[in-house]
Length: 283
Image: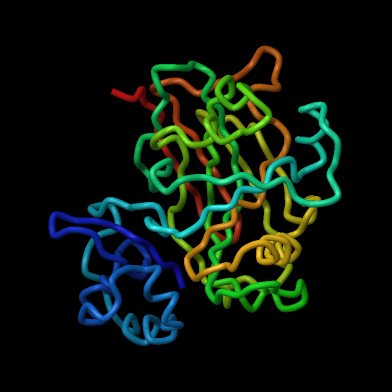
């Protein structure tokens, strides 16, 4: 099942993508759940699937505005330096535990919406990644049980303002400019992707491939990430874990390859779909 958050002239809602249409679960479930995060927190994905059975949809997919899959997550954790090629190109060392930084919800846009280059920098870089959405919360989750805490998976672009990222050893400013990241186009529920499944990640800039990797190449796997994060803080339904970017980022190319207005960047994960966003200057 593909679940989306979206908006129309009637306001925000959430639903199921079926073919080229969207089934409005906010309406079909009579407003019992405020949003997709609330649906996940209530463990109501089965109810959602039943409500969407045999339905032709309420809106053409092309006529809704897609929002970040979870527009209002409590926590967005990002894992840095988690592919060997990316560690090598940054002249860093592999760490025994995951490198963690945070993103803010306001730093994200949905599929099809412009990622914004801020006026303070022209070093706007792509980072294709796979996002994990937590379904069942918990604390000190064992790696063996981690897969039972996943609601689904989505594509992610951890858009980064590189010079601001390098101001200090802390990366937060360069990772949190307004509307610089992208999250979508939808969440594929975990029942469709078996635990530890091989997923292929590809990033393209203006149609040219710039990154390619599989989840087998992760240094710290998804189950370890969940176990590690849940050790120091409780995970909650709707929390997002952005699992790391492969080598090939623009800042480490010669010459550097940064995103500029008029560009289009795509992040494709074979089991999920394609997240596509134009690049524009922040007004």
